[in-house]
Image 1 (cartoon, rainbow, N blue to C red):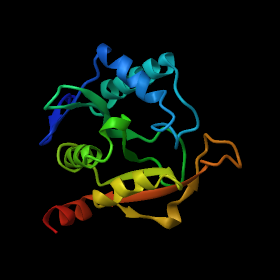
Image 2: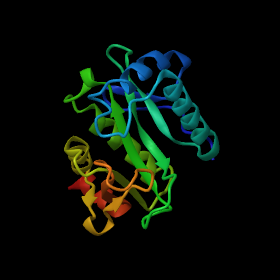
Image 3: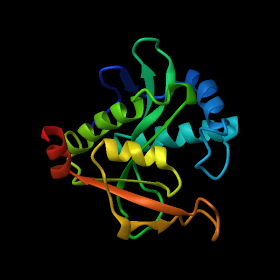
Image 4: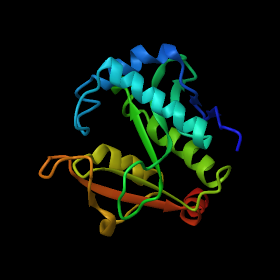
Length: 189
C-alpha cells in the first residue's frame, strides 16, 4: 500500500515528521503537564528515538502518527494518528488512535479534529473494521477526546498496562473502541 503521507482538516495539516520538529517535540515531551499521564518525561534523545519509531511504522504499514501543523501559523503542535498496538493484551492485535499536543494548543479542539481525520483514513482508505484507544484511568482529558469522536468505553476491556510495574499509579488503563458502523452512524448522527 502506498503510504499516506499527508492529510488535511479544516485547521490542521497532518504530515510526515521533519527533522526540524525535534526541538518542539522534545520540549513538549519534557513538559511535566503534557506527560503527566505517562510514566516518565522523555529526553531529547528519547524523543528523537520515538520519531524514528514513528517513521519506521510509516515505512512498514503506510500510516502512523502524523505530525500536526497549524494551517494558520505553520507551527508544529504535536501528533495524532494510528498505530499498531505494540504489546500483548486481550484486545490485540489492534490499531489504536492516539494524540499528544503541546500545552499551549490544548482546549482548542485540535486533538478531536485531527482524530476525526485519522478515523476517516482508518475506515475509508485503510478499510479497518475497528480502532481502539486507551489511556490511564485517571486521564479524563484524553477520555473526553475519545468520547468526542464517537468512541465507546468497553469496561470489560480495561486492563493493567503490561509495560508498567504492578502497583504503578498509571498501570490501570481504560479501553475505548469504535467500529466502522459506529463511525458512520456518528458521522450521519
